[in-house]
Structure formats: structure tokens, C-alpha cells
Image (cartoon, rainbow, N blue to C red; front, side, top):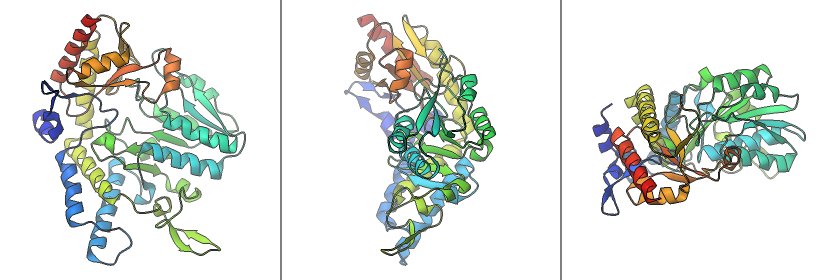
Length: 404
């Protein structure tokens, strides 16, 4: 990988912070920066092809529709779905999970049924199911984690009962960097006749995804975490499941015919895409996926794994450093504390040195309770980050530590 060339594609990385420090952007787990190819593709469409899709016979509408559906094919190819019927455009991972929770909960669950989640889930994969629980009387069963941040797989197998209707777990923890054994999770669930939803928000930007090989029933990810625009995401669902689920929202596009007495719904994938889609954002998402595909997901993964290992080695040289999560097979996110320095103080002072990290509970409060802490500092890496930026982070943390 030619990092210098790649970094030139991201103009924001050339910024100077507080008119003094070069930007070191290590908050990629929250959102990634966007290459000029993505922004320019979206600008080009707004300036030259802007028209509502699927509804017009005129030239611009036909062209916009073609671009929108080409984007769906790009997504299908990127995650190796069997058909574009299995690719639903949403606003992001959160909406994708809510869609499954709402539709699956309404159609497939009744009082006393159970959903298995894990102790390391993002709030979007907890609260979504709690809403179903309040409405339908279901309950959550929780896979515990070990002290080093791995799922207790023996405990997981014991959670299945005749009432288990779905397993919904993160592929990668947004706090611990744990890469969960989703292949085993899916196999065990399927042995019990239970479908699986995988939250791929933190895995899709960092490794190749093949939903057919995984054999997951649903898979969700966000565009803005993989160098695409905000407000666009994907829900993959096996066609057999999407056919069985009711629509998520009502409106235009998701219908075939409407009367005051009866409505028939559109075919897949449009049944789940009520209203005007963000057809410009789908173009941006497709360009982002083309961008990382041209580099190669295997090369991106190797670079980020090397960067993460280097960062953990360097950070462990700092007195009082504590890193949460497994010390091996760690994805491109590191949550940490330094001595008794409050994570908010640490993040604020690092910011004054040009280092952008994340602080807080990272939308994973139950995990914080399990760890016995209120929050952490978190550095997360992307394809454009460098070892020199890791050195800058370590130097800045040392400087803050000496202040305390």
C-alpha cells in the first residue's frame, strides 16, 4: 500500500489543529474520513443527474435510477450476497438492526420468546430488542464475556431454549476490538434452528465480508464507517427471511397497489424502502466500496493489523497503561486508561495536541458495568493511518501523564 498516495485522497488529513499541530485522526471507529473520489461522485450526481428514482419516465430519472441500482449491485458484490433482492438500503447499522427487531419481532415472536445478545453489544443492538420486549413481552438472554474480553462460548450454547427465536451479536466489539467467532456462533444457532443477525459496523471496514460463506441470516453495516457518506447503510437479509417479514414503514415505493380497503406490497428489496431513498448517498457508498476494493481488503486488513500490534506494543511502554480486550487477534480499535487520569481529561488534553480520539462509554454501558469502569479513551485506526501517527499518540499520552 502506498500510504502517501492514499493520504492525498483525504484532504482533511492535511489540516492543522489549533493553528499548531498536524491532525492525527484516530477516531475512525466513530466515523471515517471520506476520499475525494466519494465526495466528487456525489457532487457530480447532484450537479448533473439529480432526479427522483424509480418514478419518472424522463431521462434524468432513468439515469438516476440506473445509478442507484448499480450501487445496490456494488454492495451485493462487495459482501457476496446471492441477489440484489437481499440488499436493503437503510440509514445505517442502527436502522438496519431496528428494522429486523421491529419486523421480526412483530411477525415471528410472542410473549415469552427470547433473543440472545452479548455483554459487549452496542446500544443499538440492546435497546432495539428492549423496545420489542416492552411491546411483545420477549426477553433478552446475554452471552457473558471473560475477563480478557472474549465471549464465553460454552455459556452461549447453554442459553438456547425452545423459546429462542434469534441471535443478534456484534462481529467486532467497538470497545474491546474483540473479533467474535461468528462462524461458530452462526453454526451453533443454526443447529438449534435459530437465525442470526450480525452487526458488521466495526468489521466491514477492516476485513473482507462474505455473507454466503458466513451463512448469517442478516448482516448490517454503515456507509460512514467505511469511507462513505453519513446517513446510508445496508441490511443484508436472506431472501427467504425477507419474504416472510412484514414491511418496516409504509409509504411510496414499498407498495404495488393501494386502496382504502387493502394494500399489496412491492417485491424485494423495495418492500423495505418506503419513500425517496438517499440515491446520492448510495452512489457515494458504492464509490467508497469501489475505493477499498481497488486497494484490496486483504491489504487493508494486513496494514491495520500491523498498525494495531505496533500501537499496543508502544502503548504498553507507558507507565500506568491499561488496555481493555484481548491482547492478541485484536481488531483496529484500542480502548485504554492511563493510571488515574479520567478518560475525558485525557481526550481533552490530547485534542489540544492535535490527536483526535474518542472518550466515554462508547454506547456500550452494559459492557462498562461488566468492566467496572465508567468509560475509556479509545483510539481506532483506518487504512490511512501511519506508524508515525501512533508515535505521535504515544508521545502525547506520555506528555499528559507527566502533567498528572
